[in-house]
Amino acid sequence: MNSVSMPQIDALEVSAKTVTPVFKYAFLGILAVTMPALAVYILLVVLQDHPSEGTKDVLELCNWIVKSGFGALLGLIGGKAA
Image (cartoon, rainbow, N blue to C red; front, side):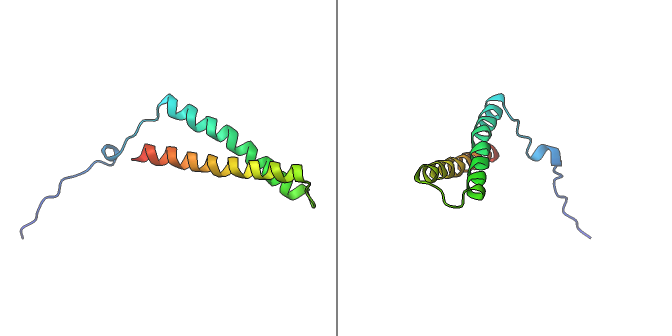
């Protein structure tokens, strides 16, 4: 029986990306802005039956911050994985 030997790949060698302090600070900074905005958005939606115009403006702002924040987090993670 002829067997072809396949090269062995060590699982630890495949991808060992290091996380730099700059990445950590950027990630945590974006998270520090996104999570409170999400909390404020959820609280306003739950607690306000008939929001005023000012509350609607705050909701739009929080919505924009949350969308941008999650997009930035995904971009950071995707850039680190590449």
